Image (cartoon, rainbow, N blue to C red):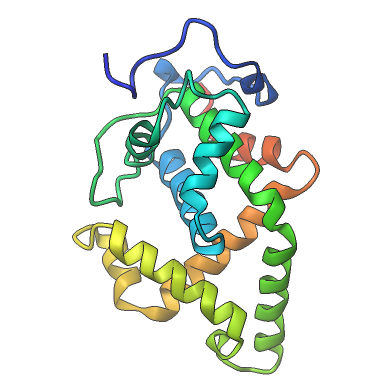
Length: 202
């Protein structure tokens, strides 16, 4: 049985921090999988060595039963249909929970940095200047665009639109930054998790 489809007999206790929903087949939607992976990509654009930090967080939170190693993490993230490495699989609810928990835990230490970047965006808009005029903001956007371009499949229509327009891709990077900040707030992780199932509960 593959890493994606296997479910541990004894679930990590931390998964209980997020509520369960009666969804069809107990498998997650493509849109949910895409959203989680893009937010993890946002963290990678913010934090040097983010991939290693995610693996450390898996160990710290005892999530190894769900995500055994680096390859398992890559396979879960490849459930995003925009990726070159798209695996055409659907995450289980427990797998999605684990990724959201990892994302939230990695985002919290970045909260101050995220706020500074979003404040910089507001300042550039007020001055009617391109967002790339701010050094730190430009650095984040450059990193995000580089990650997005190297990992996403340009043959996907929406990906192609983003790759053909720097402004469109910058807009995506900034909107994801706002979602990530939302996850760092009080009960932010739970509220974000619930939002992922909006309209999907059977």
